[in-house]
Amino acid sequence: MVFSLSNILEARKVITGVADRTPLVPSPYMQEKFGQEFLLKLENMQPIGAFKLRGAMNAIMNLPDDVAGVTCCSTGNHGRGVAYAARQRGMRAVICMSALVPKPKVEGIKALGAEVRIIGESQDDALVESQRLVAEEGLVEVSPFDDPYVIAGQGTIGLEILEARPDIETILVPLSGGGLAAGIAVAAKSINPDIRMIGISMDRGPAMHESIRAGKPVEVEEFPSLADSLGGGIGLDNKLSFSLCRKYLDDTILVSEEEIYRAMQTLYYEDRIIAEGACVVGIAAALSGKLPKLEGPVAAIITGRNMDMEMFTRIVTGQSIELGDYVIDGMPYGS
Ligand SMILES: *Cc1c(COP(=O)(O)O)cnc(C)c1O
Image 1: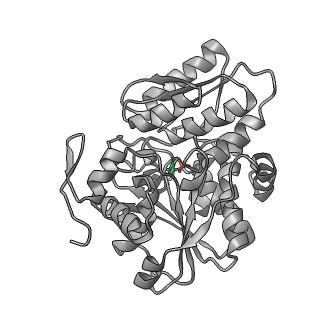
Image 2: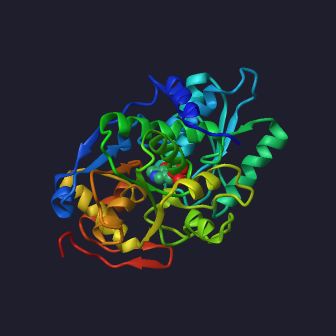
């Protein structure tokens, strides 16, 4: 499949007016800490609270008029993007999710008028239901990451970053199915081939990281994580996001739940930003010394804000967190 900058430029025309051009703001704390400019791309400010609106909108606007409706499997934010975009087009949307998806995400999707199905304990279980809806009810499936329109939509973030700051040298991208990283990488490297693209995942079930190492898509076990939006596999029959990530990511890095916890506290106390665990993995990697030496301005994508506020409050007040049978010990900020 040929995928290039032109797909992303087309996507931008389609999503303008629905998905916002988000701010790219400095983090004085991170700059002080690393001696480099450190900028945050605030996708948590999108109308649905996450960047996924970009890809979902582009995919759904490119469907023919006569489809019966759309379906998807989702860790929450893609479903919300699909629900929002389907409503814009007056289409039926059925969102399939596993029981691992936090309740506020499920409620947010229902509030947009979409039907919700909760199936099983993993993304793979949810995918089976979404595929059944395609076969039996004629709905069109919108993949959360392995779809050229979705990747192109997410890639518009890369255009915006380089238009705002052509001197950016490193981009830190949260990495799950890789639609976000693939789109941004194609945009950014088409404009400046020397940009360094680093994908970051949680160390509990990092499907794209393991697949890149193996040289082919592999399955990983899915666990509860603070970075719930990064859960799930990349699909053993992955068509596009895997090959693009393999080609364009310079490195992939893993962070622990404790590092994510601390990064959420840091972003909250130092930059006054409420962000999901999935968004802070770039900051977590930087703070834990896992990044290669940072040279030149860095941009980190703050991908979304749709989290359980009770859990968020526990984190910023330094209390312990239970993720299934994994326990993160309480750590007050600055301790
Ligand atoms: C989906 C998502 C990601 C990862 O995007 P992929 O395209 O699956 O790699 C990161 N952060 C948030 C908040 C997300 O919803």
